[in-house]
Length: 274
Image 1 (cartoon, rainbow, N blue to C red):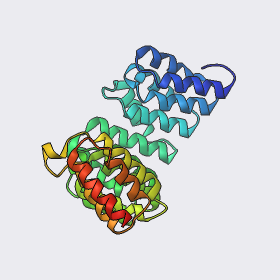
Image 2: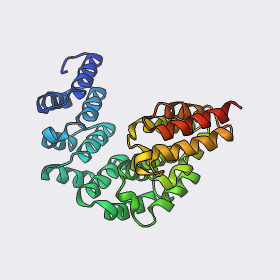
Image 3: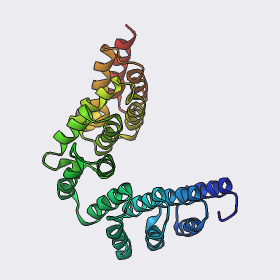
């Protein structure tokens, strides 16, 4: 990890990052001292999984890291910590005025994530999602939206606007936020992104991955689960010949554990081949 070869050091960091536990996190954090910024970036990203064990060390390093992209990765790792140390929060407050706008935006959002929750957090994030805001602030706010904060008043209409009129990167990030938060009412807006070649590939992958992650049987909990909604949307897409993303989504839905969803997917597949 601390050797002279950056490629070998990065590989060691990736292996350690894939291993849970305090010992792995402590060893991985030593990589923050590597001379290569690429290695330090890999280490910072890997530490986001085990920040609870090394948050203080990561916070101390973030303030002295010379490369903005690594500082931002450190901030995001600290932001992901469930029970932050006071020193970590102090670091985020300090980096909120970082000369690099992307680092500053990530830290500002991090302070909000640690001090607010639910709809209060959503209300505080709304100004970051304004069309006049910088792409960095918008992106960082979208990264942290969850099922509770997305319920803030005005949040879903704001996301709908971004999904319809934002630039491609903003629309893709907003789509990920909607999928992650399970906002069923906004799924049709997300699916429309499959018609744009600039946004279709990553959105299609996210929707396909979602269908197997949602394990709640539709027949047990009614028609308003993510997978059930996606099966209905996929059926409409198939009739409108929105392919190949529609076909990928339908094929994944055919593997779902719920019989009603598989039946709906079968019907959608039939529509797509007529």
